[in-house]
Image (cartoon, rainbow over all chains, first blue to last red; front, side):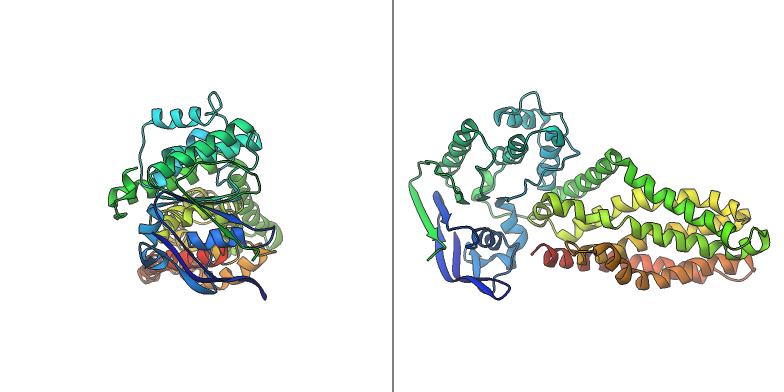
Length: 205
Length: 236
């Protein structure tokens, strides 16, 4: 489904990686490994189409993601370094707007349920600037609960989360994989996740 | 998990919902940061009020320069507010998410520009009669000036959005925006002040208004595409 062909990434004159090839099918979990500065985030941004590869291409269902941006974006959920959460808006408003922007109009109850599930019960109507770092991250993660995207691209999803939230996120990822979804992620934490098919790409080599 | 097997289809009601959500979002944000909006407005008032002090308190002189003064102040005020158009979204990562939405980016850009105009352009239009009176314009000229501002300020926001998108993440972007955008504002300025000037001296002014309208239509059609392309480059 997701295929990467001969991908090359450079930052300025410095070549981060070159000739990268891999494929990802439904139900597969892909972990990117690599030391700091090895190009993990750059690779994830290329997979989303935010960053143009120097060489090579990213294919979704056999077609370049650039040729089908809207269709690809409809099946993509990207969680980057920054949470993508507006600090002046409440957690509830953030989530509602996020879904509306994706073209999904959900019931208020569904949104409140998702926020409660992710551990923000009682904090839904606070401006997110009053929340802690981990709680802000949870507002961003609440999107995973409501998303029907097939491909999740998660950049360091476990940072700032407490032990319980890490376990919950791992569980969410496992459930997504069981339903036939795909997950690409990076992390420096060792989090155990059960998946039928796990693969790894190491950018240090 | 219904979306997994279906190919994403372009859904028009979804697009409209997204468009509206973007407008409402930006208006809500502006309401929660009212200080930003008021700063621009007071800037506009103060710049216009400086002219009677600096040039001459003579009514005849002021009446002569009034349209130009108000228009130039409006240009500067609208430019001042451009910095906020994308930079906050860029910093907190919501812009990235916006680029990854299954909606055409230019349509969302148009929504953002509309919201920006509603909070930074419309107040200028509404305030201009007061400043017009202060500078001794008569009722007819004031009406016409409001009309030109109503047609012209959206063009300023639209053109400005391209500059704001191009200078995202650049250090000293604020100054750079003015260098990029102010020259492009010149036609709007010429025909905006020209219409009021022509009317007060009893000449035809419909031509000026038609041209302003044409600028607006062209800008509304073309600049969202340019802004969308510029945003994609800036976020890389």
